[in-house]
Image 1: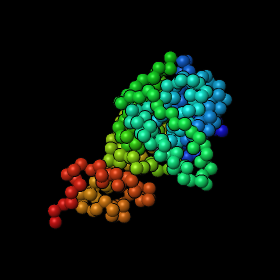
Image 2: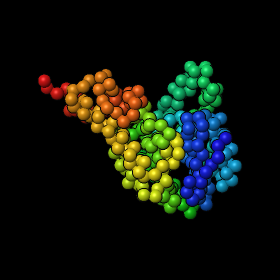
Image 3: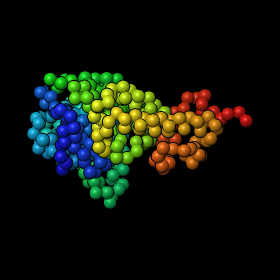
Image 4: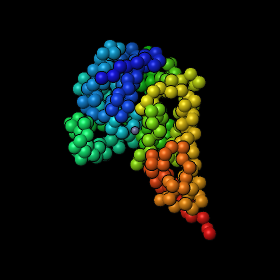
Length: 283
Ligand SMILES: [Zn+2]
């Protein structure tokens, strides 16, 4: 159970202990849009109960900010509670969830001591059925909600949700507050800074930005995180340009966060360098 707190007019955020994950509700006169659904059907049902207790209306749509299961495995609960509501996501997010959902369940099957194992195994993965490639507007009646794919970063299929009349942006895991940004095996470390430039372009000095994990932040916070993510990208380029092999780069670089968190940033960054920059310099 968690409490939905209004962070701007008719935009409520609940922060859940497991993964410190945020779920956001956006209200309009047609009903409620739920952004991200937590990590299992059981966890999603707890969110459904919290949305009902909020008492702001009925859910008419669900959005997934990206495919990761801590944002999508609760989808089923919203279909159980509110029927065939559309689940909207970037097309790559839908594809990845369809392709890799089972892999996540298997990971939990192999983790007998995890307290969430049974819940994850009992989850039926509901893949988004309403997808787009670059931008989309959802009509909540008296309010339009904009979904924007700012480019690849945390994953290939990240989206941010903008509620223009409330000056709110829900950033998914393109921005994190309670931990450094997560570079996983599906990240795009060299493109991430540019994607955040697009996100920054949607923000004003007064914007409320809801990260995928942690407390709401402001534009300055996003700008600083963009710069740190930019340093990671530039460091990968510099090391590769100096001929440092990929397997020595982590130890050789100076990073804004502890190196252990950046293994995939380096591996993926090296693999994604343009061809010419991947070659060792001539001796
Ligand atoms: Zn994620």
